[in-house]
Length: 115
Image (cartoon, rainbow, N blue to C red):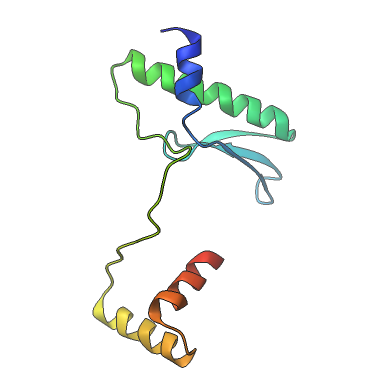
């Protein structure tokens, strides 16, 4: 497969580089495509290494006949989430929302946004 095809396919996946206090360096990951990542003291070099690693994973998966997972870049989301809870947890959350003068949806949306 051509290198440009691999780059195009690799570009369909979100790549994240962020500082890790725990590791004391920048860590680059590509959720939805690969576990693990790339790390180092230079943010730009970590990003470049991450891009190369993603391209390698895409090339390897295709050469072994595996289907690539759904792309994560530019994915569209409806904003709706179906969440199944134990009835006791559901009840407790409703009561907490009411105590705050909020609907359950507003209560949960606020908590999830802060997470």
